[in-house]
Length: 204
Image (cartoon, rainbow, N blue to C red):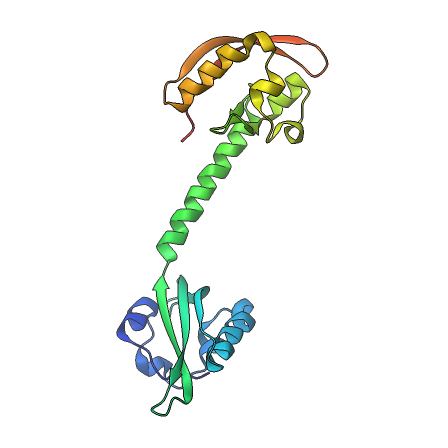
């Protein structure tokens, strides 16, 4: 498990020179402690001839910066096909992960804004099934989020006389044509009637 190869790209990414790494135990020296077992399993598998592809590991550079790498571990063989070690080919996915995490944070923030908005908000997918149902919608209409998610909005929550027109509004929104201030009569779970101004916007 000791390092015997360390190319210039690894040195550039992680800040450790070849001299810094040669002879060092790879897992205990360069891998975060919580991943020691899983990385050791990958290396052990490679030593037995079983390669591992697209395995994610976290390393810290010499300067202490976190790096996320996608690795392929392949068996290294000698002239007589004997196993002599493991080659680890890595791809730096740190920037991609940061971008993904940022997008997830934005999505989470938007979800919280929707859920806590002081107006009923519901969303549907391209098939008309409910994907969003905020607290105000639940409070007004009496249906919890759990009761609505995955249900067809028009067939289950819109009165028969309004289904055609609401269907047209949703179809337009799915085509990128937004509708503002559409009077929508709603009937709550308990028989109470409400009229809300519907703004249908495309979700991308």
